[in-house]
Image (cartoon, rainbow, N blue to C red; front, side, top):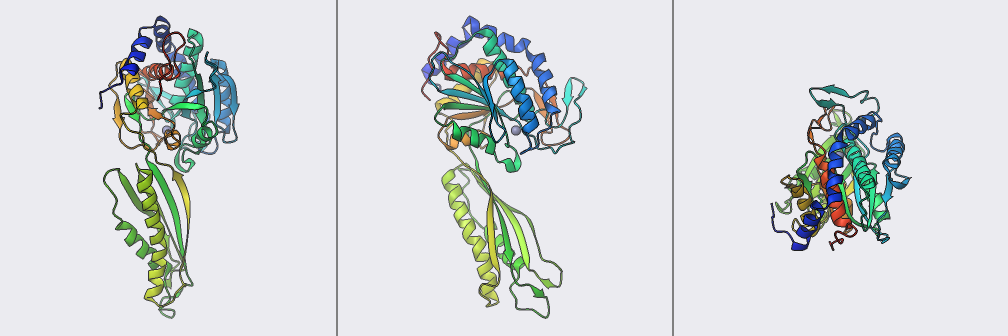
Length: 414
Ligand SMILES: [Zn+2]
């Protein structure tokens, strides 16, 4: 861990943690933990598969209002968002969010089972826990009478998981890019984990089609499967750097219609990732050329130009970003974690909602949602809430540090 901190940032956290009102708010978060856990259980049974978050979004909007958030609105993606207005009337905000959607389809979550102090329910951690945690942060801010300088924006975002590709967060931050100074996402396990990189990810769906024919009678006709095979072999040989970490894999390949038929169609998917936007773009260009070369090489082998054709579509595009571990946003997140008595564990890489602000130049971190957890993205998921309120305490300190606390600390330049 990088341990060098800018002096002014250290001073902000010293002032915050010795402020009487802030201490009261931190105590409040600990006392409020049972309410937070009750709301986590209430939310998890309102199922929210990716792209089908409407019911949970409507319900969460009511909870946000009840907690004291103002001007709560739901946008066309079903992101729900509201404000705690700062004293400075600056029109600028620090965003705290968790995602509404889960990886489970409707009918998976019927109940929360409690056993040995653990809560069992698919989605109980990821990311329902964050939604509940952020409600408690609102209550702490409102009840304590703490007055941030800039506004605090709290959101539940849609479409983070899978093919959602963080599109809810993308929509939210792109629409409010002028307003958001910094963004904190609550996602991932435990109280110490943090993500500050934005690993970019691009997926393609690639299809080869050709005339096909009988394996014996039409021998000499280019094959869609063979074209695909040539492309896959060349893709497999792509060289990528170790740093910035860059990866690819081809999967879900299938094709042909019969063992004794020259394939008329073939399809595969490729997943490409990099911590660098530039390297990812280079790899994408290389892959696109190879998709075409697969068809060309197969047609050339049989001297039938144009027989097999390739089409492809980009099915996911998550932008990569570059934010260094020594930047002030990451320093502030580490100081907030240390102030809660936890040693931060920064993770390299990361494809989280923070990708979206980072990609457009807004400083962002993703912080773990606290507690112990097991089996996220499986039906065996459980959550152990022991000591979980530290997540909320960390969020509160970081929000106050970044937004500034009236008469106590000024908002730092990031
Ligand atoms: Zn998540």
